Length: 257
Image (cartoon, rainbow, N blue to C red):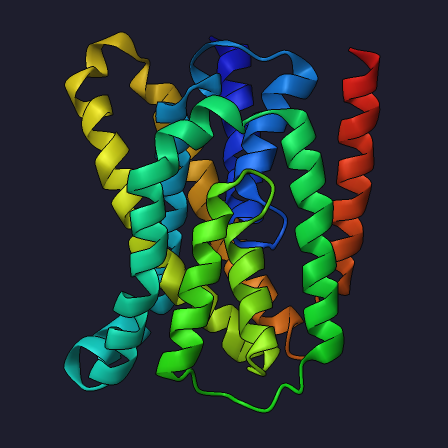
């Protein structure tokens, strides 16, 4: 049980950081158990739900003022978030099960990690970074891109930030919209899958889930605040280089198995 707790802490920290850094949290949550041969409750989709719930709370704490403003006065931005959420929501309903069964493997992750990292690099080079405010057209484009993040290794935050840069948003505006857009997606997925946990709570050690939740919450707070400061003066190139190194490590490990 002690080793399971430690694994829960590690995966919670990984989730909180990689959910918001553009490096794919799904890929890391698949790869860590694969690398180290971890089994048990930390290698289940329901444990992933507990981790995502932690990052959801971190989002709500960091952006509650933005949501209150959208609900009270900035209804246009609220509409943009709602419109941008639709493609990913439909993709999850229509293709979520198929993706879980066929695409959660190291080769897919390695390919998508490199390919969409290069898209991010291209967006950094092309972007004029002129707009601080998202338009309806921007929201539709970013929302469509978010649907692609169903593929492990793409990174939901990475693809939405990249799409924002391609639409000439400033890095800070692209990152902020990405974080706001992630709230209903993470919230919807957490509620949908969380019902299974509530129904079957007797089959799981909820203390392990609670530890993972807390670790994801704390590291998520750090990641959000760090990235918002980081992009004011720095490009996203460093995350692209990380993605390439990660893909090489994945391919090396896969070749040895």
